[in-house]
Length: 401
Length: 126
Image 1 (spheres, rainbow over the protein chains, first blue to last red):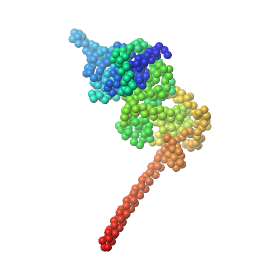
Image 2: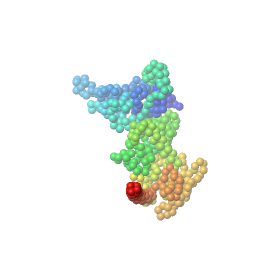
Image 3: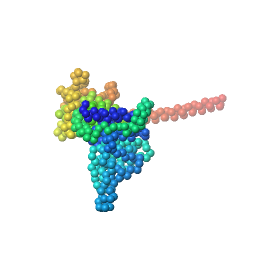
Image 4: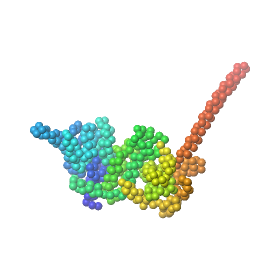
């Protein structure tokens, strides 16, 4: 293990030494900090340690070079982005903007982001989207950063922020209340650090080291198998034979009488965006860089934190529990695909058209929409080449809708 | 990228190799090269020897040929139409029988009333 990997492991240990009740999310949370402009959202009920975790991560990575703005207080644009320098205007007639500490700081904390007013949210959204901020007609580029935000959506003073804003957060982790044993551990920690858990957190990784780590992670190349698994997982969560994206009718009403009602798609009102693929790729790279390998099983574990703020489910009982169920279904689906040798069969069909193999592929397509999409793309080519008649294709034989 | 997609398919093909020999599809499982099932597939005009492995049973086969039901079954448009026809016939039959049942119920009630009235009349005369 290299020097930088050791540092990241140390960061994890320092966090685990100070934080109780969310050990299962710390691994993914740390991995998410290893790519440029990382953004993390922590969702939890009040008093479960979301602000503490946010501050611990920011201190471990940025030390004192961090600014936290709070949604609980009335935040003005001048405090978040920049304000006009009045003397310059009065004396020289020049509009000079004093950029706020939040835009300059490397570590940016957003406490109770659900209570931020829509104007501040819009400015932060723009910064996350374009890497720049605007104030009084002037623009400033924002360099690499670490954003950690937290929120309790159940708070009565919640603003409903637009879904694209939440989509800008790479991952969304959930915290829970402490078990009996964990409560004892928290009491011990409070005694050990004399109630100063956050201020006792050292800066484990310097700015230059974090830059070097992020560069190394960016250069990691993933295997085609892993890239395929990432794309398949997300595609399975997106695909809908009835065109959910364009339809005004959403599941479960849209799924009435559909051939695929037992699939993952029927549980999703809104599918994840393509950003989910990008984030899962970043996490897989970070995992490979840190631990030397990343398995499909790791991807399914990490996907649990990539999807919750990007998808809307039908009949949510518990977001994490329901998503875990869907990912279990996805796990089974991936195994089925292996058993049926779907991708090797598609590979052969790409190389040459074989009628017997195509018949088998058509049967597979009736049970797998993602496979069907690819087969239908091949069918188009074969029809143009005159190898296949239109009435023989999957679409002509089976009317899924 | 198309190249990346093809590399993914290639990597899967290397991991789980399949063979097509004379139209039969096979793969090595548990160290044994086995063809689980061989079907003759009629395609287009010609008759092609098609090795169809793990073919899901058709719903009609499950019903009429007493095939074992697996986790998934395949149903074609023709089969669906056949089933729809049978279901509509059964529905019509149920409605017809319901009508007869109601008629018989009414007759039974009337007969019961007549018998009760006759018995009461007999009692009164007595």
